Amino acid sequence: MRDAALFRNHMMRQIRSFFDERSYLEVDTPVLSPTLIPESTIENFATRFDNPFLSSVELFLVPSPEIYMKRLIADGWGSLYQISHCFRNSEQLGKIHNIEFTMLEYYTVEADEQDSIAITEELFSALIDRNTADHLRPPFAHLTVEEATKTLAGVDLEKHPRQSSLAEEARRLGLSVPDEGESWEETFNRIFLTFVEPNLPQEKPLVLDRYPAQIECLAARDGAFRQRWELYAGGIELANCYNEERDRHAIDRYMDDEYARLVGKRSESGMPIPDIDREFGTIISHMPPVSGVAMGIDRLQMLLMGRGSLDEVMLFPLSRILG
Image (cartoon, rainbow, N blue to C red; front, side, top):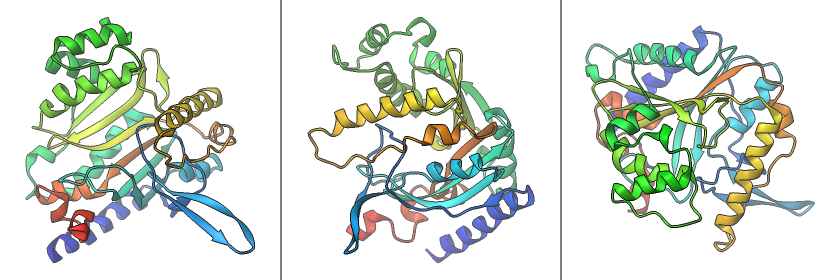
């Protein structure tokens, strides 16, 4: 494992040099927070701050530094990056999953998601040496979500904007879909995770962009699509990018809807639900135009080293600690 530690040390220096040379400021924000951006697809780790002189406070390990980095951008700090530990509960442990992981998150001011593709290609070029396999070398390949779904699953998303219609397509493919209570996004994910993601081309890193607007997130909307892309390399999801939403009403609506979904999911489990900062939408509506990318560092290292599992690059993965 010492070779993996040495490789990681060198990779981290390269990443910092890359962003420092482009005048991004490295920041270090909290991993504990009393509030989070609600995401119904993510379970959070909770703990409690106790003090004999203060009221007890429920705190949560952050799944991403986004909630604090956006505050700094709204305050005029300019382009930022951070390498931080992030945490997601109820995740599987396996070749490409660990509940504690390292995230590289970078925000480029006065840029959109298309600009971030070029920046990420430059980052890859800086990290790849002559001995790295060509399947990781830029330029990236491109597919829209509609193209990928039509080619690999035979489903034309443009013809199925309603959940009921998309559910019929999923059943045609042999998938089990409940008669009621499922969103368009949940049905889409059944199709995508079964037929599309496992069969994405792997000859080059692949940018999958123009996500359908029915997939709720804090990426700005462009008609029927979100200004968002995800990067796959070696068939593994590696990065997620948004042209960040700055409309206060859209942000507040998203947070209220996601919070309601969280309450519905956790009403029986008894797991604590992070509070919403009701000022967050107002705060980040003051951001300049900005594009943000979140990239899994452990997966990136695994791919650059040509390894097949996170266990081969992480010094103490939880599977080994528990094993």
